[in-house]
Length: 52
Image 1: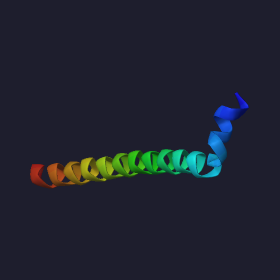
Image 2: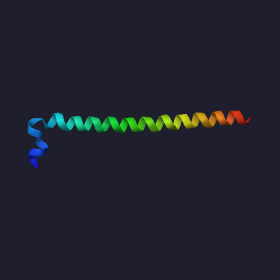
Image 3: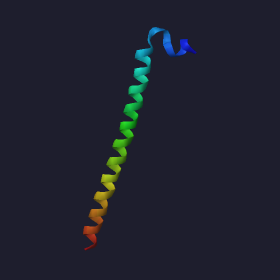
């Protein structure tokens, strides 16, 4: 098991790459959720304006 986590001496590079990929995926999801909320809020405002 230790050899798996050591990755043949490249553990720092391998695991930091996995970590960076995970962080970027999470940030992408957060950005998409925020963008979606903003678009829905904008559409709600436009719909409210058009009803008047």
